[in-house]
Image 1 (tube, helix red, strand yellow):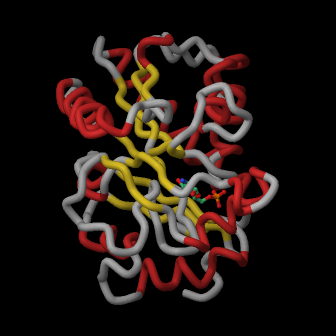
Image 2 (tube, rainbow, N blue to C red; image 1 turned 90 degrees about the vertical axis):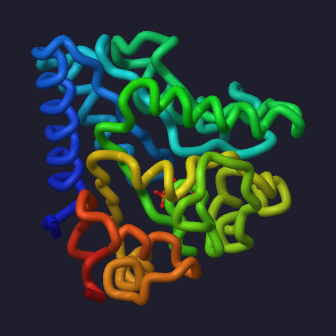
Length: 244
Ligand code: GLP
């Protein structure tokens, strides 16, 4: 769907998340959300905070799994996705701390594989992700699944693309400070979500959105794999959709 601007689109996505949470709550069930970082979902989180503060939306029955984290990364670092999520969402809502999951950027190399398996197992044990929110990187990455990622990939340690590190350089005060690796949910992990919403705003994303939506399905642009799923919706503003 194409919306006139990102604010309207973000409020719509937030309303869908709120609806899911409330529906689950009525049934006495848990809502399992896959969350994303980056500039793109900020207005969605802002609206969720508003719904919590002004309209009584509770997150007590919500469990979250974030897509990714830089590696190595200390949770309390300014650029960590833990800090991002706390500042933009978790600090302002009533979610239980133990229900928040974000890949651990402090693990020893040797412990990463088992951590990743455990991350997958936790998602599965909760019945899978009800809804996964996605942004898209200019390399076509979703999460940090860079070009070359396999369609059935699981949570794992990956190497970041040069363009991705360049795009992140502002947050880190120079590309040389951007970690070279990350832990990310896989394409396969994302695909198992019952519903997937990929959001993109601004002209800067128009070329990669064109490739993702209309391009040949290929590991060169991991987001093209989303064409294979029937549970995916692209939520765009007019600028991001302008090359379609
Ligand atoms: C980062 C994140 C992705 C995000 C992408 C786009 O690399 N790991 O999950 O979708 O960048 O970021 P932004 O929304 O800031 O454009």
